[in-house]
Length: 176
Image (tube, rainbow, N blue to C red; front, side, top):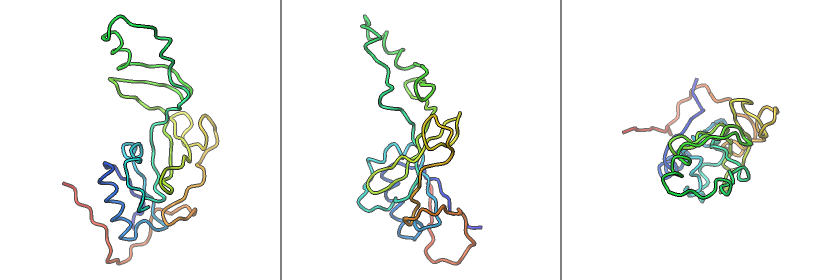
């Protein structure tokens, strides 16, 4: 079988050029699935969306609700800067979305948001957490995702494979 599900992990500039080539070869049509990793999804705003070559791509990114940040007024005033640094670099509490954990200054996400690249932005379509798996809404047991617009501007869920056929327009990828 010919695979039609691809995972892309790249910097925004490279991903933008890559998806233009993918579109040129006809691989952004119905039947294909493109998934981008958190590193690229969280930087979608750096991409040039004018060409719309990423329409229908799915992405995952850490989910941190805007209204559940810690109230820093409760910490109080610290006498020295060195007292605050260890608190910020290694910090943990149980928030609305689960475990909020910072290790060595990096947030360890326990909930991921799944988005669909549509137009010049992304549309939230669901969440993934270790506790509930893939759900439409956060802290809900409703399995699945909200409607997804797949490449080719279709809502039909792709099979992810196809019987091989001869095609002059093959996408070739070189890794250096």
